[in-house]
Length: 110
Image (cartoon, rainbow, N blue to C red):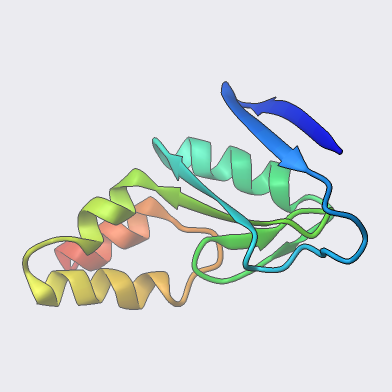
């Protein structure tokens, strides 16, 4: 009924609630990535056999939803300048996997 596991140094515990409880987007994992290399590695690994979604979301081959977010996104989207923040948000909304360079360019209006 209970399993513990470790992913990239983070320990998790999962409980089997039985067949009446299915994975939905209400059950998801948020991963705060250090950089684009970590985003790429996790995105490619977790989406293999699953399906990519929008805005950094994906479903793995088991149907579990993950949101893979670079730390830079949170910093850029929280800029006190509402115009910069909106450009970052608008760019992110068009993405599947988040691309840090594109988010930074939107922020800097390059």
